[in-house]
Length: 363
Ligand SMILES: Nc1ncnc2c1ncn2[C@@H]1O[C@H](COP(=O)(O)OP(=O)(O)OP(=O)(O)O)[C@@H](O)[C@H]1O
Image (cartoon, rainbow, N blue to C red; front, side, top):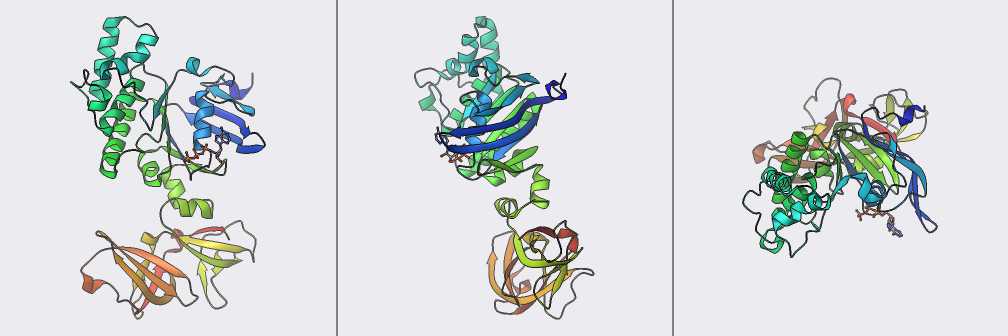
């Protein structure tokens, strides 16, 4: 027996999956394993292939090549309804003429469950999503957030092993989105269901996921925990898509040294890139320190000098951009203090950071 047929705690495995529409390949030879009880987010810009991947797993579309395993079993050709995968959509997809109760009961009625069990399960699902007492309302009598809770209740009511959510909070305003993120995380924790979640909002992905699968042009750019993607991006694309980043162009001149220009070099962790190759030294703005030109930065720090070209006070944090002598704008994000403690616009400043906070990327 092939090892890959064993389930090994795998909820879903994609093996060499490609998808072409006509002559255009929109998903390329993708390998992805989602573990049982995992919250995995498909993140990426518009058109990167997130929905295509979701539709392949649900069975709404068939792959051009490769296979899909559900708990070790080949489901590549299985019709969608037999896969038992729950779906939550951005537009809720509720039936407008039915009450909340009947919408949530729908999947159980389709499974011909006894009416007493239906009643118990529906009320329990409504309770879990905070909609106790809303069972007699029609969808149009609910707010957007409440309608999406019904969408989620209709999904969890029949306890699918896997739930896929396609931009479920996309139609909600920012505050409600944040509240619903917390609630979906709580539900995931309570139910232990595997969740595959699609969003193009990187903050949402960082906040909610066990792992993030970041897509670019039909390929996985990086798959890892939120921490890994944020602190150890493997490419310029990942560094720029997740959070803010400073990218200093340079040349690798020794195992742990990158020349920023002819006169200046910084210490950066050794990379596998060959000596003399063009690289980018990535440093997150909150890891960048700033001090007066005559002050001493922390021992062992890389130092660049420049002139303060922009200051923006954004509440708890202040963003200070310094143009270095080599013409690169570098941003430091520091905890805000009184205005008198900030450097002045146009004044000279020293930027510094610990070499361990640098990530060397291909230039
Ligand atoms: N039925 C189809 N026929 C032809 N091309 C398609 C079809 N469905 C999707 N595509 C193309 O496949 C690519 C990936 O689309 P997909 O919807 O998976 O992206 P996405 O990452 O979900 O984007 P968004 O965030 O905008 O929803 C796009 O270039 C899209 O135009």
